[in-house]
Image 1 (cartoon, rainbow, N blue to C red):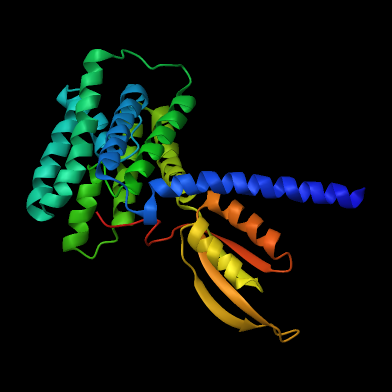
Image 2: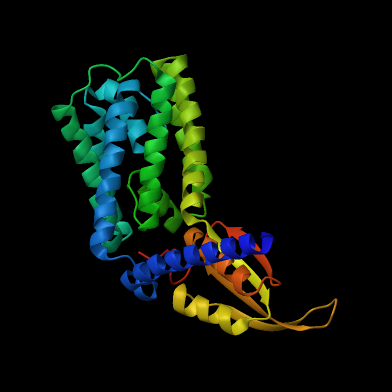
Length: 317
């Protein structure tokens, strides 16, 4: 009876693996050879991210005067002196920075960044007329700070994945990097921190401290979300079934691998070693398949924060 039960469980497990593989094959037909993302899809994602950033600023940052660095933070501070809405100051600032970037960085950068930057700023200005806010959405400022940072971090991650930027302080960073040896990350952090400290003097201790907290959360959230999007699985497999494993990698996963011949130190047996990278979804299928055809194999799975190459993140614009 126990053997029948074990056999039945193996058959069920094999059926599940086959069903998942069929779904994977259909998906692979749409993504043949892991081709780069189509241009129209990049534009859709950039548009979505730009509008999401505008909603975050309009709904949470501007009404609460959260100065979390960047051009938007400077615009919130200047709005009280220039008697202009922060969204309009941000739009003017981004346009000036884009003109500067056109002459210093080049046309290609300005087209891609300019689209996101201007759409973000124009949407924020439009929202001031379509959905004007005379007060904050809630009385819970901490909740609104968390939402502001989370939504912005998610939108920034989308832009990162399509090699785009929201402009603003990013343009300043690239210009500084081109002409100086200044450590850009530290410099921008210092400027952002200075703006946040100034907000304490202008908007009071509560808003100032919340802005400081938001600046810290911003870095943590962006890193966490980017890493969760980029996480891949690096497999090191020692197996005596190289043909089956190789066929699965090529035919079912539509990926490649580095294959080495090896010898075990303990018993001196010859084995084949595969090194292969998959995404998180493929990893589950891969692990189940290998164990089903070679229960004695040895598998090491390593989480990686970033893979650069075909089928994974491409840093080129």
